[in-house]
Length: 134
Length: 291
Ligand SMILES: Nc1ncnc2c1ncn2[C@@H]1O[C@H](COP(=O)(O)OP(=O)(O)OP(=O)(O)O)[C@@H](O)[C@H]1O
Ligand SMILES: [Mg+2]
Image: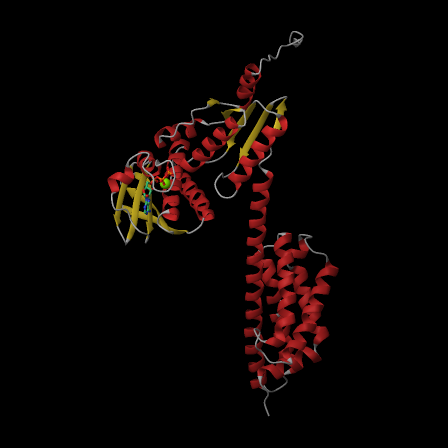
């Protein structure tokens, strides 16, 4: 698998979340994703960026255009140095929230992506990677 | 005895002012800014003269473009940059205003330095450094102003795009446009609830055709708005959920639990029906005569 483009965006304010969505939309269009897939990855990115901001106390996102054989994909890695998640299964459960949200962000992001990976260490931080393939 | 850069430069811009100004203006005239009509010749002349005068005075205090003697000049250049950012000049055009001064001053140094090569060299290095610094200052102000303009436009859009429209007696529409997070949502909700009270509305149609992304936060805001409207005695209809958004919402797992319609027109028809009204055609549709 090769990476043909990498860029990093900050996630430190509400405006940053908007910018992340706009950038992800542009990259999704660049690799030729259709309207539905664009909307899916943009929405997943919006969920994860907001978690990074609200629970991770801010961080950044790395966006990569990846290629495996003839397939192109968009991979996004959200990373923060926040408090981390003690029980990942619980956090992934629909309707579980510690912040008065709907508790659907993580599960939703997983369902909206082709690949989903989460790592978290309490006290160190959280990293969530998603990908959407064309 | 040879002089330092500041002295050489100071002497040159004082003795050769007219020639330098003329060459500078000639070069500015060729620039795209005047050609495109964004700025008038007279305005450009005034700006050039002011800047040149302040440059001459600044040089009496040395060569440090960040120093105190340059403060009025930096101020003027900042103002010029700001106005250009607002008028929509390109960065190149804006930076060229100051960079176009290099060549004329070099020329003048060559003419006035006479036979002293070290004077000439000192002068050229000095003017290069100084104008580069001023050029950077120009760009910094330009970029900051552009960001300000963009930020303000964003805010204006946020404020503009939350109107509540009265469609009929007791029927309101709230066409949402743009991102729904940030400070906007509170304003939107307040406007709608106030309008429901003022109009004694029975039905409020929230149209989200113009909302690019519906994530859990937006969904939650919509649900809260619907619940609050219900408490005020109005039912909500959500319209304009585009197919790709509907599909995404299913994957997210959010359900709005309100009546939803594809278009605002469909929602309006439902609203009329629910309030006991019906739209009828008074005459048969006019037939188009064909020849
Ligand atoms: N980056 C993170 N750092 C620390 N905790 C996190 C992070 N992301 C998620 N969590 C925890 O996982 C929980 C579930 O997250 P999820 O995104 O599914 O729901 P939510 O953010 O609470 O609500 P919603 O996203 O539906 O508005 C959060 O409430 C929070 O406790
Ligand atoms: Mg969330």
